[in-house]
Amino acid sequence: MDPMSLLASPAIQTQPAKVGRALGRLIGVSLGPGDPGLITRAAWAQLQRTDAVWTYPARSTKTPSYAFDIVQRAGLAPPAQHQTLLFPMTHDGDKLARAWMRAAETVLPWLLAGQDVLFLVEGDASTYATFGHLARTVQALDARIDVPVIAGVNAFTAACAARGMPLAEQDDTIAIVPAAYGVSAVDRLLTDFDTLVLMKVKPLMDDLIDWLTLRELLPHTQFIERVGAPDERSVNGVDLPALRGTKVSYLSLMIVKNPHRIRGERIKGCLKKTSPAPLPAVDGNGLSAEQETAE
View 1: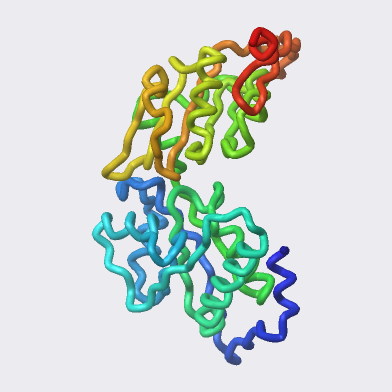
View 2 (view 1 turned 90 degrees about the vertical axis):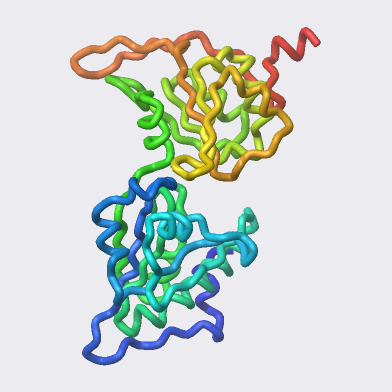
């Protein structure tokens, strides 16, 4: 369900702003991946305000907000008004639309009363974050609301920096992909990309380990869990087989360097690409066609 379709419900009504009062802004405040030291000066300035409302996402009433945990570890006390907004971990479009609408209806009265609402986001608010959904839903309720974003440090850039590993150099190509698309989709990227950033790898850990083994990419891979948090964990690719069958955090990623890619020829500042021989296709089980035939 499109969350905007919920606007037709008679139960959802917006209240006009009071005459002569400016509307508040819904501000996406990026906090970085987990280390409070990576909060930017712009975000820090917003967090010092006492006249704004803090909101922050959580998956359920039983799961603490990771964004709120970051500001607490930064030694910041919340303002008098602060509120958890629930966004369930689901691919059910109807449930997500209802969650976005409930969150929008929660923050809208503050905005119409002229208060700024800060939506605290781990990482960067424009990269695989909930803020975009909330901002669009709020603006569907009242198009006058401004929704600025304060940029933040991504988990994958922080992970590379901490390990002295360049994310990209010179003409390197990068793909940033949710691993949920599956091993077959990820495998097809090897022809065109020098670095793969695989986000949210938790559901496919075993399949990805098999695929990395097949493609001889284990020595060129880093697995990082909860980047910047006190319990951050990093595992070199050659040690990844030990994680088979174990649970990892939702906040996990892999950075895969692809040294086998054949690059094109540079001509007048552009790349003239000669397509390499295609890699054998890999199915959803991480097996190539040759392996399946052999078996």
